[in-house]
Each structure stands twice: as C-alpha cells, then as structure tokens.
Amino acid sequence: MSFKDSLSTQIRTFRLSLKLTQEQFASQLGVTFATVNRWERGKTIPSPLARQHLQKMQNDLQSGTQNSPASKKAVKSTYQEVDIK
Image 1: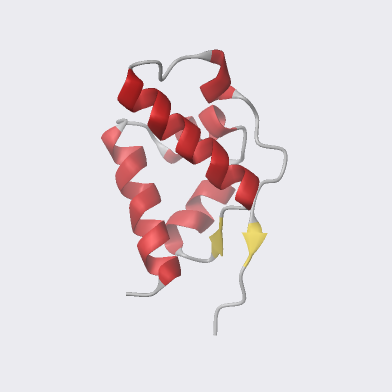
Image 2: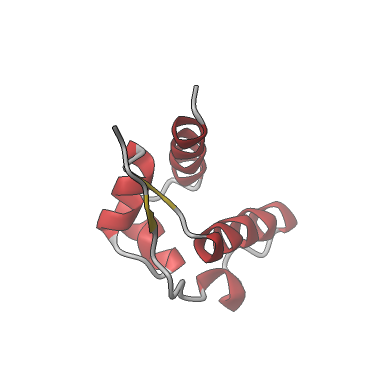
C-alpha cells in the first residue's frame, strides 16, 4: 500500500469514526466537500496545514474536546495536488 493509499484510508476511517458525511467533515476542517472526496480517493493529499488540523481534530477527540473552537478553525490551504500516473 502506498503512502497516498494509506493516508486516504486513514482519513476515510477517521471521518467514518466521527459518523460524519464528507460534507460535514469538510465543514469541520474549513475545506470543501470536493477536497475531502479527493483526499479519500487518493487523488490529492492534504497540505501540511490541513494535516495539522486533522491531527488537532484527532487529539481533541481523544481528549474529549472535539467540539472546541480550535477544532473548527478553517484550513486556509485546502489541498496539495498530486500527480497520479
């Protein structure tokens, strides 16, 4: 399994563990539905900033503060394009 495949699987598994649709998950992260969809299909990967926000969301969930304002902070950089061959 490649890094992109592993990351896309992790993102989808995390979203599903929160019982969120792609649209709801995107809203929590401040990105578009299409961005989350591309991440989960392995077409693109989250930018470093988006990955920080995903990690923050995971940490907040583990510590019981998933609905904190920090976990809903918008991600300014939506995604990093990946050339898939």
